[in-house]
Amino acid sequence: MNNRENEFRQRAAAYEEQEQKAGSKSKSVSWLRVVVFLAGAVTAWLFFRSGNTSSGIISIVGFYVLFILVMRWHSRLDYRYKQLQLLGQLNLQEIDRLQGKLHKFDDGIAFKDDQHPYTSDLDIFGPDSLFQLMNRAVTSIGKLRLAQWFRQAAPATEVLRRQEAAAELTQPDQQEWLQQAIVKPMHYKHLNENTQEFFDWLREQSLYKTYPWLKLLVFVLPVLTLASIAAWFYGYSGYIAVGFLAIQYLLGLKFQQQRDDYYEKSIGMYEAMQSYTDQLRHLEPHTFNASLLEEIRTKLYKGSTPASVAIGKVATIIDYFSWRLSTLMSFFLNTILMWDFVWIYRLEAWKAAHLDQVESSLDLLAEFEALASMAAFQYAQPHFAIPELSAIPFELDAEKLAHPLIFSVERIANDFQMKGAGKTIVVTGSNMSGKTTFLRTVGINMVLAFMGAAVCARRLKVAPAQVYTAMRTADNLAENTSSFYAELKRLRILLNMTEGEEPVFYLLDEILKGTNSRDRHAGAMALIRQLHRRNASGLISTHDLELGAMEQELPGSVENFSFNSTIEGDKILFDYTLQRGICRSFNASKLMQLMGIEMERTDAAG
Image (tube, one colour):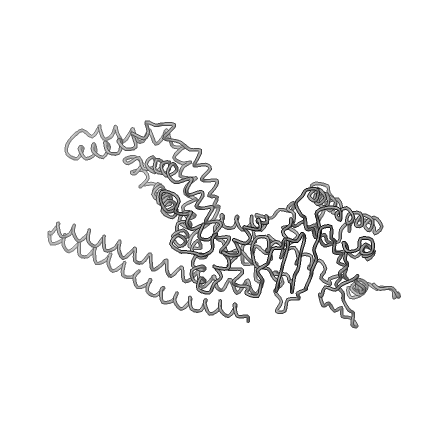
């Protein structure tokens, strides 16, 4: 058990102990609510029975106020109980991540794009992915922002700012606060949450601009209706009250579609808005030293009100709007008080006053959630290195570079260096020796470095470049595309990409494997020559030993590396260690023998 796993286990145990105490207190106060309610009912009944009506009314009011106070106390205790429970679960989840049990977490499959330059080949999204390992965001906006960071390298200046922010959040004295921030949104449901779609829809709505006369009726009709009902009780004609009620009913009927639309579009946002409010209340008063974090925090105060207050207002509006769910209450509220119209008006007024501010604030909150995920990932992996960005084109200088999604006790790591444009590293190796995994190791750590995250290495210095991969090309029956043609399309994109000025770092696994050996060899050599003349460098894995001859054709631009295996009896042993030169040990024949294929004995290597 490593030190971090020990720490998370201790934290989980401590939170569980606090949770039990908080749960016991919450249960006691819950019973107190029952006692206050019963005491109030009995006291009022005794006063009324004795004919003391005034005291009975006063006791009802007094006990009602007391009941509300106890109920709010219980709500706070219940929230704390749930918060402690979630904190305990969070630390257990950190242990699961360290142990590679990633299936429990959101795999970000919605962000997967097979046409992307590298995400599918490098397991960025999907089962057992980097997204599952790093993501701690709960809200859709936080997950989307983190996914964008995975998909698009940040400018060097932004990488440095993110590294500085993550470094502050990974300080030991920040862990309690950071974990609190991560679990805040877990109190709420985030199903079908699409905040931007709601804001875009709301921006297009203008019920009271389209029907300005409605605004007057919203404020006048309820007053007149209540006054006429009161007058009815004092002996005046009830027809006036009925008339006002009929007008409200007809107005409700006329605008039924608009009322329903406002409700249906907004009600799904209640939990999300409550979540954002909670998160922002936690973030706003906290001060930071890192420029990016402090910039996020200060911008939350740029509007007329703090962002948490502005978002809290719309959550309250949606909550009151939802009272229409009760059929009986809806009838009275909408027939007497024009309830739906009031809260539609409040929603449109909120839009005019706060929508732009809230949109920018949620963008900042998404940024913070992504930073929190990156920081938690970095804190859980203290042996990971903070990469250094190089100004030398295509420099990649790695010490003990390993794959972050391999969770063995002793990860096999390799040292590797290369630099300069027009460089191709040809990696040969026997089956299952690790050459493809090494390409993915290089690629996934470059993605981490270019987003500002820690990398699975003792040290890494890397020059910014567009990562491009061609590894998992497959046929497509729907498009009548063979795997070979799919790979050619992928390589065509690479060639198009390298025609520009942006440096491209490519990782190609077993290129042109779908054709005969002669064409494969000729095509691979032609591709290497073509890429050599462009602003590109990278690695190519292959079984084609003849590609190794290009080291003599393009000295200094093509280098050979390999992974090897040894055969001892019926065992094939791998050391997964990168070596200079072409692979000289192969195991295909032995593997086929182990699978039951009767191979003829030859002097040639299998």
